[in-house]
Length: 339
Image (cartoon, rainbow, N blue to C red; front, side, top):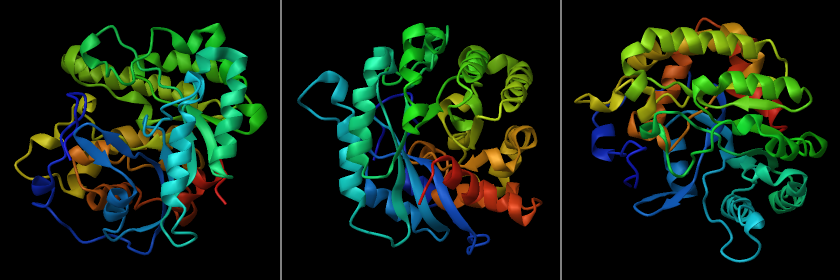
């Protein structure tokens, strides 16, 4: 299982096997707020692979599937091809019924919002294909002047969040009860702030702690990165329609270098490293607008599923029972309207 792009860290199962640790708080119910299925050259990670990771000991009750350009329709109108991903996810996860983990209980797909108001037909097709499980759209907007940071599969043009036609497409979400997942780099957070103010009735979910980038042109100014990121996240937190996913910090762009160790990181190391970033989010947004995510299989290049969730549990150990419930299952279930 090797990623086919330098934008992703390779998954090394033999390396991951070098560290195993007991499951903490094994009875704590969890809804994984963000994972993918991949079917790409050199990298297959579908329902069976995710189930194997999720069976590592934590009480994973349900999940939210996030678009990953997987199994698009091969024929038909170009605008409708992403609906194939929703069709595939429903077909490949329905057999288990109500037995946990209920994979893809919520599904977030892709539609090209640059099509403006005409995107509504695509959204309605997703909803029909989702059979009650389709909850929102993610149209990737990552852009940076440093082209080395850009993933060809997800790169967007500069200023897309401010584009008039893109916003006309996004305006179609709320009337259909759909949310908007935002994946961008932290310098773009002010643009997201402007967007969120313009669409106060749309639930906006910031992915991966707000796009932490600490490599390439940002590597030698990490203190400045943190201060800029923190200021932007605090501004976003003032808007009640904005939520944040805590996770996705095992990617190459984050620059934490977990993958460079002789052994995988322990959950203690992960929790200590992530603490300034995740505590900032929780303090700003509150537990009722934060949710933990695995971001698997992407983050699997840095640590195992079991270790990642142990780290989240360590980070939240001082939280009250209600706050912890919100972080691990309550917020995600409410935001994505999981049955």
